[in-house]
Length: 271
Image 1 (cartoon, helix red, strand yellow):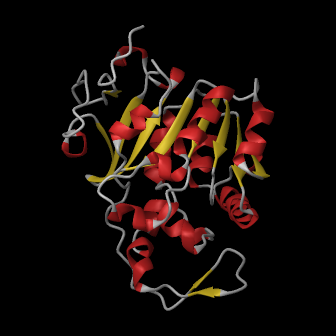
Image 2 (image 1 turned 180 degrees about the horizontal axis):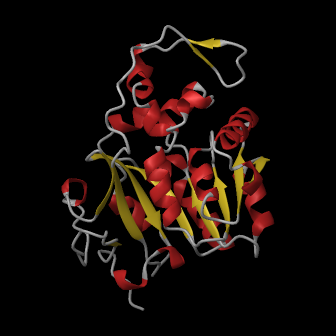
Image 3 (image 1 turned 60 degrees about the vertical axis):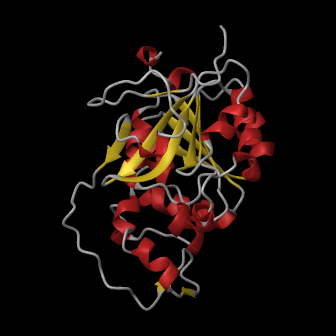
């Protein structure tokens, strides 16, 4: 099939009209073809800033400084069951996948499939994937994050469907060749400073290598990406002729992230 570098299409959502091609200059400002997540209860008040917040191991106090305030005020967006004992470290405040976004992404995955969730962090996305898939193998190089993810999965009652693995993604992923049916990637973007750049170059955070490695294991891959991703540079990283669907994730109309889908995760009627 002839590959047209401009032929990168987005998913048609239930109530949105489908567009055949992405205009790179209009992508970020286009109000169509976006998945919008609304909180189930928008009446939840924003609590006042606490003087301290215990970290995941309850062994030291993390000062909730002004740079964490906006994340603290969104804690119920990240985990609806936050008050049930959810554990997070400082990095998780700005890297966790909001629960409603995680629910939507999980709904796109094949039911009762075997899924790998790489770079799982504290488990927000893994928990929702476990509600759809038969088993989820969660990989993270940080043992403390795996400890938090295990605990958070127990809060949501998902522990029996998740296997947690401490290790480097590139070392572990090859063990699942021929086993995994879908791979969901949530790689780090370098902290909250990423948004200071007008466009984020995927090469700066090794995203092409992470993605290509996953595609060698399984063709059905999803990857969460920052909203200021350079679409032009991203598509140049893709193998020749590979089809991709890009979906913008919004929460209460605010543009948060992009999800790129490959393989069978792209609906048949999108092309």
